[in-house]
Length: 321
Image (cartoon, rainbow, N blue to C red):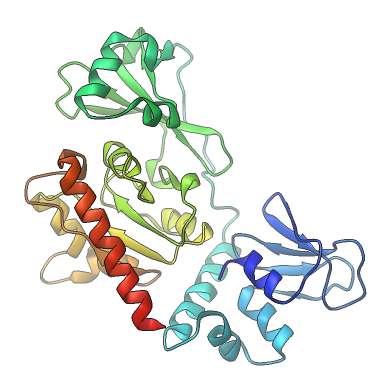
């Protein structure tokens, strides 16, 4: 359950969002004006009136139900997985409380001599998008632009946003003679952001390697993010958890590097993405055909893969119920 669902379940009144918190009338004392707050990311809660507080969502349910944290976790998640998910919450809260914030602390250097125009005004950008099967609505959704002068002349500019809605950096892709030439601005730490995270409205998502893969799955209506490669940092894991993600589908490229990154070496599976992410999420893997990237797949082929994932998830959820 998400934080708002929990508040609604226990009958809290006047629930409204304020910045990164849900505010409501406190259930622990007579309260006509919302003085109770719960952090959307961590579930940490406190009443500004009666001062009652707790570190996470489970502790709130425990107080409402007058039971232990372990019993509260079962009420939220149910079944045998309750303890696992409870410890994920605990670990996340401890990590969160030990850090200043999950947003990047540094501000990347963005050159002042960027000369960007909308993609629609560039014949070169239009041709590139058409060749790569990127439709107009997707180009608009991701605010694609084209650089006409300077260091990045001839590159498609892809703005990358942080969790505060600021442009954190740009990814630049060569439009002519591309050859997979991708550039990032100096000082930009790509391991501090997750591409397309703001658009996720579910508790699960695909994780792909790059922006083009993200666009391909987006055009099929799939929830998808990119961590800019196969290395997924602890900051990116925090960002996914803070968004309410509890299940991920790894969909890396079908080359040898992509598969090694998915599963790790034979000697140490824990070094692969599956082993690393399993500490925090329910993890499954979608195998990309050998030698191909997700965005290389034919429309029907990608559609079948996504539909297969949805059906498999439905079977898993039904089995748990």
